[in-house]
Length: 319
Image 1 (cartoon, helix red, strand yellow):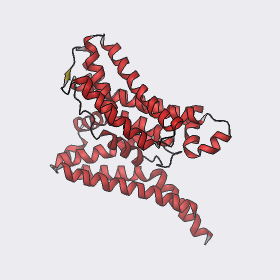
Image 2 (cartoon, helix red, strand yellow):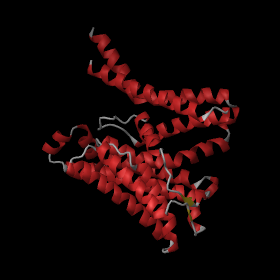
Image 3 (tube, one colour):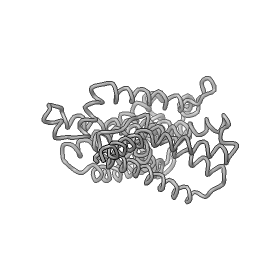
């Protein structure tokens, strides 16, 4: 009996740690057999470029979820900060416009964190309110019409290709490495995991729980703003509806990547795998001409399967 229990626990731990990689590798092999164009260099770069915006946003979502929160306002934050990055170019040099957009995203994240940690509003409700407010502010700022950029240099962020590699891919790789280091190798990362895992125990241990809880939302807002800057630069425009539904893709990628919805566990590397998995599936369906509504159906199934693997692993470990 003990041997069976230990074997089940080992299997559960394996599925939780490596299940997503096994699924991703198996899916990549199947897709390469079904669609010969999948493994071309051009298509792979296209997948990575498409993954950059959601990937940047999902990094921030990862910190929020690991810290025990939930943020559904990142899509509207992307829209507002994209509009700020474009609109402020008529008044400021484009680097200053970008800085203003990043500060705006961090400020909205700070507001989310204060509402959740200090005021005590449930995070999903707090961010539901700010999501509506920020989307409304975007309509007010843009007047309901698209904004077009004025700086040609600004377009390099979303369209530059140093050494033949699209700049958004380089930016995403740099952010993944930086934030994974923060999460895994610094006291800040350890405290964020501790707060998300057990807030009361962290408070009794002397950790500034509210500070680190708020910090996760600030990181989430900042990364959503960075995604908004890349979005605006790539299109050289911004619309009030930009980022509509992106928050769901970011959250799905984070959960698929192994972050626990109850907080305390997750990694930026895992989130990157989750982003790539969803984009690989979308890319395969696009190559095969599968309708978009079928893609949504399959994405939902993938989310349930991955969350089911996580739940099975936890249940086996408890046994």
